[in-house]
Image (cartoon, rainbow, N blue to C red):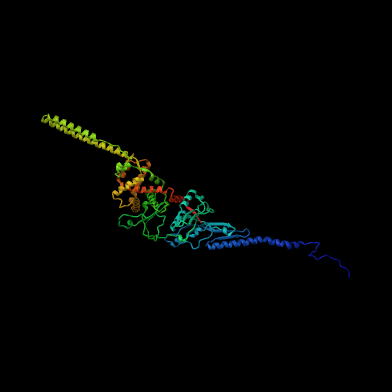
Length: 535
């Protein structure tokens, strides 16, 4: 047999001399490397889908509707949640929502507002891009600051004086977690400062509440309304015998209600006519009533801040504006109880000298007449009688003119007499009113002020008269002193002046109490932040 030539190993084979081929490299190295390159994508996909699933569970548990999108390659999940503006429900008509907590509060950060039931209104969408489920944030809601605080007060929350003072002084720099409202026992925080993340410069707050903390219900008077103005008038109409409750906002009186023993619904509350004491550009009656009613309420345990007593009214109430001499002229005080202010006129000696002179002249004339004949004496007596009558008339005119001059001088000196402060004037006027039986029984000045406010609501003519007197008083205080026309106005209606002084004294007392008080801190914070973010 012939020997065939050796053509070498078959194609694709390998031996120890030539090494692996390119196909082998692709097969044994390239494929594993390709698999390793896909693994991060697979890992990101699984991680993103797992995070997305957890986020959706969180949203379902919190009863939230959201749009979700995921980028599995970059491990990014985009969520769009609605943003709301909220307001409390009506405390009477929606009792179940107002007085109970939500059955499905959100556990997502930023959702503390879902502790309560609210009227909601969608105002936009909030988009967020996150990687982990614990980065999910629920958008804070917008709520009127005063409505939020009023709602918590109505449930039974208690303001924390330290927190409000800190907020007023440091604003947005107030530390996170600082308590503004606490539980009724003061041991737990009910409203705190929250981080400013996403609050767009608004004040950011977080809420916390337990159903066991709710200590009030719809039958209680809302704590941000003015206390009852009890009537003591022995009138026969029902409106005069029932207490009146006033709601006063930053714009003055809103409504006045004839209050029952307990509140059961808005339907059972009779709204009274109050147009005569509303704040209007053409009248100051609304300002005076709102200021006095606010002072009347702030002096009690009720916390009021809605209406800010104007600075010019507060300044007026603090001034010493009524000369003590004027009170003497009005027979309110005795001149002996005031500093010396009037000129003393000692005319007794001069009157005796004039009488002695007239008597001597008469005696001398009668002696001369006795030496005369009958006809001559008759003429002399007639002339003497005429001279004496004329002298008496001249003396009377001089005396009247002198008295008029001295009376005018006394009025001018009364205007220049030392001025007394509002509280002193009101105290003297109050006793004067008691002497005239305008004040009943053992009523004190505060109770009497409440009676005046009650009457102002029911009697427009009385309210107008009282407020005109306050306007007159404030006008002379601002121009530097009283005039004769001012004194005449006081003399024409002195009772109105005395009653006005009682109301002004009430405002003065409040102006001192408000400085550095919780009410003032609340009022200033409400003025600075009308709308806040809650979450």
